[in-house]
Length: 257
Length: 262
Ligand SMILES: Nc1ncnc2c1ncn2[C@@H]1O[C@H](COP(=O)(O)OP(=O)(O)OP(=O)(O)O)[C@@H](O)[C@H]1O
Ligand SMILES: [Mg+2]
Image 1 (cartoon, protein in one colour):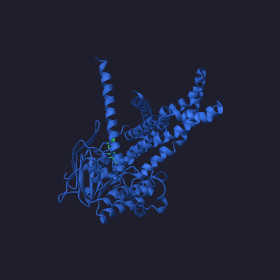
Image 2 (cartoon, protein in one colour; image 1 turned 45 degrees about the vertical axis):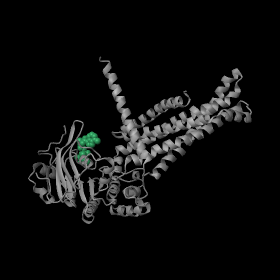
Image 3 (cartoon, protein in one colour; image 1 turned 135 degrees about the vertical axis):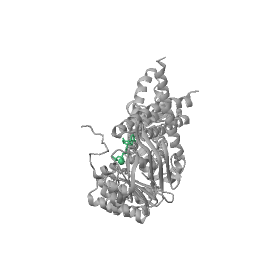
Image 4 (tube, protein in one colour; image 1 turned 180 degrees about the horizontal axis):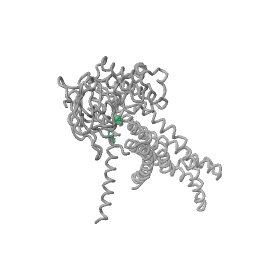
């Protein structure tokens, strides 16, 4: 019997956190879809998430595309299946690697920044000050970040798709001596709409999750600088794990049957 | 020990307020009334729960028990949207200023005007600059960010923000702490002016008895989670209450025991 108690406690604690998180998300979404909106705040977050993440996401994409081409070449050349390289690159990038890697990069960059900013506002009573100025903190802080995260990550992933494929093309054509026209043809021929769409849906979900984790942990941080540091770490770790878990779920939904 | 004020409905009426954090009991059956247009100062030792009281009234903290009425309307446990409406009546100067560090000084001051009152930014900026000059800050600071200000300047910007929307009820949490004596007196005058010309109801917290005498119609002393004495400002010198006497004369000896270990 004494073995059951800690397990029960753990389950209860998990359910409690999940419940609080769900409530937080619900409240954030309700405020995100109902006016009044804060266009200035939404714009600021969009620039922060979309524009300033471009270099990081672009670099990740180009190197990933290059590595993919190189690796699949060393593998496929054993079976004389080099022509499949273009297909492998474009499918892996659009379906999996662009959304997941961009999501993880943005989790590190944006999730951390959001948790730190909102956490600091919490411990220095700025969130209380918002309330006394008749401004709902969910509307002013959480909703713009959720909107911007959900909209901007798909844009980033679209860019990452293009850059990733370009990375594969560079290696295939300039290092491995493929014919450029054939490579591009192979890329296009096997790419289906669902490959792109599933990747972009993933990106939207991941963007939402990153913003949600950043806001949730920041909003609930307590106890000065140490608390804010803790919130930042928690935001990045939980966002990363959720991205990987949801990646599986969405893949199963799209391609599982 | 009569803390209530007779007459029409008080602006704010607090009865039997209880607030605790875990095991630590902070407020224990507190009663207090603020009449319309009245300026009340709360005094009391550090950590007795003065700031907690203000946060309970504003709905930032949820009391365990008791009633708080604003203009006769019960506000404890009010739903979010209702709370927002009630909070439009309030202005608050936080003890730690609590300026938004992502916004410039003038946007901080204009925040309530733009967000809550829907004023156009150009127009709000003019009012913000005017409020800043009332607290002795020139237009050259208006574009700075709060991180570039000194402690006393932050406090004054926060004060300008609290009064910018000309609220009906204003809370000042230690308005003159950290200011030089002359600027402190300028702020005292400003608070008096808010009450006089705007007809605002003010509740201030201060440790500075000189400032309390200047801005208060009434002084209330918080001790042990309640108001143990409240009365007109000119009566505080002969309150007949040992706790009050010890506090206003700042004596270490007396009924109030500070929890310090040698
Ligand atoms: N968020 C909180 N969580 C836990 N305890 C708190 C919290 N806020 C305040 N307290 C406790 O409540 C008590 C009263 O705090 P409060 O800030 O109201 O003091 P105060 O009377 O304003 O003191 P000071 O004059 O130093 O500002 C303190 O003992 C403090 O430890
Ligand atoms: Mg205080």
